[in-house]
Every structure is written in C-alpha cells, then in structure tokens.
Image (cartoon, rainbow, N blue to C red; front, side, top):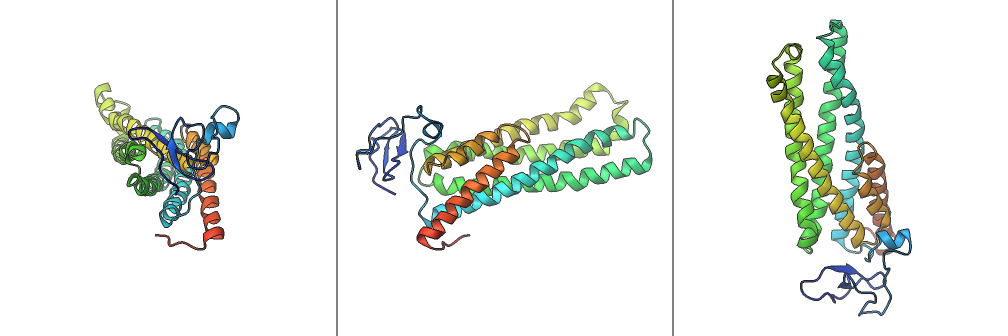
Length: 260
C-alpha cells in the first residue's frame, strides 16, 4: 500500500495510480499528482472510487474466503428456490387429502433441499465475515457495520429453521387451528426473514467496500445484485469471478501466496 494522506477524521479512498490513501473528496493525489475519477463521467468512474490492486498475503486469504462464500451462496440460493416450491406442496398435502405417498415425497424433497440450503447459506456468511474481519483490523470504520449486520444472518437462519419445523410437525392441524396459533408458528419465519435481510445488507456493504478498496467494479456490481432475490445467483457469480481474477493476478505477478 502507498502513503496515507488522509486528514484525521476524514473519510478516505485510494489513489487509482499509486494506491495512496487520500481524502475521499480529493481530485488530485497529493502523492503522485494523478487526477482521480470524479464518479460521474462513466460507469467505471461511478463504481470505482479509487483503490489499488491486492498485493499482500492478507489480500490473498480475504479473496479466497470471498470465493468460497460466493460458491456457497450460489448453491444455497438454488436449493432455497426448490425449498420454496416444496413447502406449499408439503403444507397443503394433508389438508387437501393428497395421498400418503405424495405427502411423504414432498416431505422428503423439503428436507433434502432445506437443510443443505441452510448449511450453504451459513457457510457463505462465515467465509464472507472472515474476509471482512481481515480488513476490519486495518479499517474498522469501513467494515465494522458489515460485520455487525452480517451477524443477524445467523439468527435469521435459526429462526427460519424453527419456524419451518414447527409447520412440518403441526401441518395436519394448521387447517383447523386458531388464527393466533397459526400466527405464532409463522412469526419465527417472518422475524427470521427480516434478520436474513439485515445479514444480506451486511454482506452487500462488506463486498462493496472490498470492491472499492481494489477499484473493482465487477465486485461492486455483484454485491448490488445480492439485493434482488434469486438474481443474487448472478451477483454471487460476478463476485466469485472478480475475486478469482484478482487472486490469479496476484499469482501471476507476485507468485503463489499462502492461503488458509
């Protein structure tokens, strides 16, 4: 990394030429004199707010965690899509007198897709948080919010699991239950969904910050696509490709790094 020219208490960015840390609103780098993108001229200028290529072992490990998290979130979202299809089939098979075989088959599909989906989502968040944690040691102001919000995803997963299994095990009585009782069973799922959204916001913020740090528009675009359900698969692919390309670039220019 280059020198630090950021005044105390000011937000910072990285020079697009030398990698020095400079004031966020600086038009010219005090270190090398290169004019910085103003963020409005081009799409690249909008997303790339200044940064320098990854170059350290910490960067290598952080990008490796992002790759793992992105693969996991792609698989988790795909499995989650099938889980979403299975739940209505399972929940209404008994009240509408579907055959026992159909009831058992939809239940099997639900378990077969739901548990792995939850596991992959948990693993994805764990890896993203490891990446954010690496940079939060140097830039706590930039990554502390991402770390705090991403914690909610764990709580959201637990609540969703509780809600799903409550529905599974009391499914036969749902059609005749008191509305308050039904709401009681559904409440963990609603609250869990809110927590998962907060967790996703944390992931988006963290990935955006890393994209900004390395002046990488692909990662920034990918992080934004995490906002849209199921389109997040494309976001995961873009983030994975971005991290993979940067890490391969490090290998070709500096030699193999030590990954954890």
